[in-house]
Image (cartoon, rainbow, N blue to C red):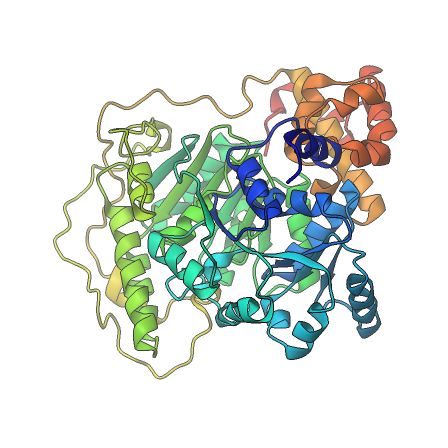
Amino acid sequence: MPAKSELLGALRRYWGYDSFRPMQEKIVGSLLGGRDACVIMPTGGGKSLCYQLPAALLDRQTVIVVSPLIALMQDQVAQLAQMGLSAALLNSSLSSAEQSLVMRKAAHGDYRLLYLSPERLAREDTIRWLQKVPVSFFAIDEAHCISEWGHEFRPEYRQLSSLRKNFPEKPIAAFTASATQHVRHDIVKQLQLRAPDKYLASFHRPNLRYLVQECDARSQEPLLLKTLRRHAGSNTIVYAPTTAKVDEMVESLSAQGIAAVGYHGKMDAETRRRNQERWMSDEVRVLVGTLAFGLGINKAAVRAVIHLALPKSIEQYYQEAGRAGRDGAEADCLLLWQKRDVGLLAYFIEQLTDAAEKKRAWERYHEIKSFAEASYCRHRRICEHFGEKFKVPRCGSCDVCGCGTDWMAAPDLSKPVKRKKKFATTNPAPATGRHYAPAEERSAPRAARHDYGEDLRAWQRFKEQNGKPAKPSPAPGAAVSEAEAELREYLREWRRNTAREQGTAAFIVMHDASLNALCQRQPRTLSELLEVSGFGERKVELYGQQILDALKRFREGERAAATEARPKSAAVAV
C-alpha cells in the first residue's frame, strides 16, 4: 500500500488537486489493497478517480473498466490521455485492425486502464484473451444495471457474474450513483463480491433546490421560460418525455429568443455529438433532451435541470436532477408534471408482459407518484427512499419547506384545488395490440391521453408552500463583476477554439471548475499555473504557455468575439 504522500503526489501530478473528496482516499486504499468494494456515490462525487488513481500507481498492470456507453468510454480515454495516463477502449467503434492492436498492446501491459462493454465481456474469446492481460482489478461502472430491481436493469450486465469464476483472484469494485438498499444487496450478490468494503455517501445534496409543480399544458411552457430566464447565461438541461417534444421545445424556445439544442435517440450520432459539444463548451446554454442524454456528462456548472414530465422512478429523477450543481453552488431542480404523465406511465406499465418486471414497474410508479404529490420535505423523501435517515426536520431547499418559489408564481393562477377523483393504478387503458417504441422515444397513445388528462375539469396547478416563503435567491452570476464575466467568456472562447483545432471536446481541454479557478487566480507563470486546482503536470505541459498567453492578451484589452458587440447590460443573456 503506497504512503499517503505518494497518493497525494499522484493526485497533484495527474489531476492537479491537493486533496481528496470525501471517501475517495479510503476507496483508493481498498482497491490498492486488493479488496472488493461496493461504492455508492452521488453524481459528481468523483467515482472515476477512485479507480483511475490506483491505475496510475500500478505499473505494468491494467484496470479493466466496464462501461455501458461507447461515447462515455471515448471521453474517459481522451481525458486520461490529456493527463498522461495510457488508456484504451475495445468496442465496435474500432476497426478490426485497431481492435487487434489494442488487444496485443494490452497483453503486454501497455495500458493503465482498458474500457470494455458488458457485451464484450460476455464473449468467450474476450475472456480467453483477458486471461493473458496483467489485470489488476475490475471496476464496474453504473453497477445498478446488474440488478433487476435497479431502474436501468440491463440483461447483459447479469453476465458479469462470471467474472468471479473466470478471474477468482482479481478484486472487483462496483460503482453507482443511485441504488436503493435492495439494489445494493443485489449488486453484491450478483457480482459475488467477497466481504467487500462498502462505501455509502449521503444522498443529501443541500445545494440543490427541489421544486415540484403540478401544471397543465397551458401553464407548463410559461413556467419553463421563467426558469430559463432566471438562469440566463447559465447552463441548463431540460428533460422532455419524447423525441417529438424535444424537437418541439427547441423550436419553441428559438421562437422566444432562447438558443437551445436537442439531444435524442432518433438523431444520428454525429448530430448528437455536435449538439452535446456545443452545450458542453458554452456555445449554447440550453440543451433539451430525452433521458438518453446525461450519462457520464462531466459538467460542473449546471444551474438548473428541468423535467417536463414525471420520470419513471425516484432513482431516475435523482440521477438526472443530480446533474445540476456539481460544483457545489446552488442550483434548481424543477419538476413540471401533469396529471396525464401519471396515466401515461401506468399505461405503458400495463404493456409489459413479464410479471416480475411489471410488479417492479408498479412499485416505482407508486414511489414517484407519491414523491410528486407529497406534502413533506423533498430532500427527506429522496434520502429515505435510498435508506438514509434524514435528521433535519426542514431542509429549507425545496418547495414544501418554503425555499422561496414565489418567483415562479404566475399572477393569474389560483390556489390548489382538491382532487375529486383518484387515478387508477391498474389496467389504465385498453390494450390496443399495437407495438410501441420505448417510452422515452414516443408520444402518448390517444387512449392514455383521453383517460388521464384531457377530460379532467380541474387540475391542481401548484402546491402551496408549507411555511413562510424565503426571499428569492438572486439570479446566478449576479454578484460576478463585469471583468470576471468577460474573462470567463474569453477563456471559454479560447477553450472552444483549442478543442476545435484538436478535434476533441472542450471539457477535455479544461473542466469548468478548472476554468473558474483559473479566473480567480489569473497566474502569470507556469509554476503559478501548477498551483491552480485542476492543472496537473501534463495539462500544464500541453496548454500552459497558451493559457498564459491568453491571459496576457486579455490584460492588454482583447475580449471574446461573442462579447465585443454585446451591451454591458446584456452580460447574462441566454
